[in-house]
Length: 500
Image 1 (cartoon, rainbow, N blue to C red):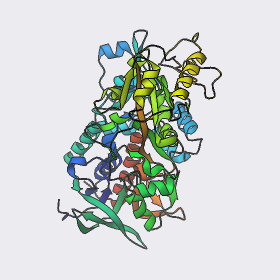
Image 2: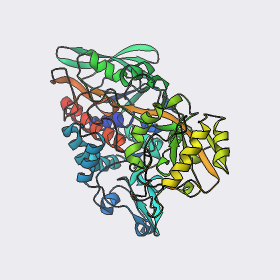
Image 3: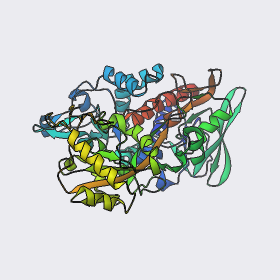
Image 4: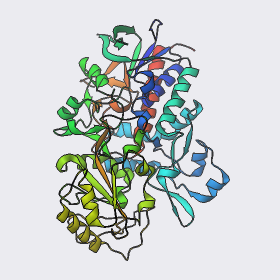
């Protein structure tokens, strides 16, 4: 679109955080323009590539019923559990080594449910995560790991719901519109210089919200900040999150903040493309490893696959895989546990081999990414012998079914590999988003290097630092984007002071 109108607030980025910011600013009376670097067909940022999981506070099924419809049968056959504020604080603190900014953590947790209710009021729909977050146990679907709901239709459904809300609220969106510089002076930020369909365009505004992601799609920045080898990682999501928003803010004196050497990175299919593929979406991920063993090129296990629920380890195990020789790992399952695999293991584009013996499996693995066969056979034999078979196996809880005496014991869900056919899935590292970014205050306003607010500049989403360090509780990313997007947009809109 040709940008000809006058706008009070320009939001840079059209993912979940940016669209929540735009809706909140509009709700507070602002005329809003959203700049989306991607073309129309790729719109939605990283949010469109997610599975749509949402980590929020709920104290029982009544809280879930405020957000989604549940049938009588679903209510009778499901144990949704609870996820209290205390549990959320415990998980976020434990997984980030208690480095998460306490003010940001408090906002995320205490505003999580209210923000989702606000989104539902805008037309966004939610649903229970039966296929990925519940196992049937004693006749009931038991939800585990603090996650009960997802966006209806996953990430694509969330994005479409938010774009529909933008249209209903009269918010303009410009595509192939990449923010490049902020228009600023001693009085603060007054707009954006953007490349719109190949042309440099100055867009004046009274406030700007940066919500255009981290630097995960920028191989040079990944290597500079995350370290050697990160240029070899694959990118799970959009190719447009190249750090532009962060650099725009730093150019005018914003304070860099957070875990710049850290990122959310997972096990990702070995033959996945360089960037995310919207036709496949999040299904290149391979997250059922707690029920498998993982081995590297030397035929050895390198981590405790059962250290915790997948939600609490998957975002750091991508780094572990990248650190292995040749940046890959195989996940090995037998028929005792394949029924626990998530749907992503059944896509057509999977890198998988199957065999009736472990020896034959190793030979077939060699066609893709070989392991030391003798060491691999030894690893499997020692693992099988170490499983404490007298402990009951239960995938819905941390069951304590461990191995004993290995260099790295598997502390939960240890199942011997002894029932063929065996399945092996080859994975590498897939980067989701980076943890470092700019610093904001509790109003979503960007702070400068003296920790003073920069007038007219707000930020939300992945380009904000200070929330995640080292690791990440699954489902927190979308909720944090929504919470801080709403906060930033509300603050920007109130700054304008225009009545609808």
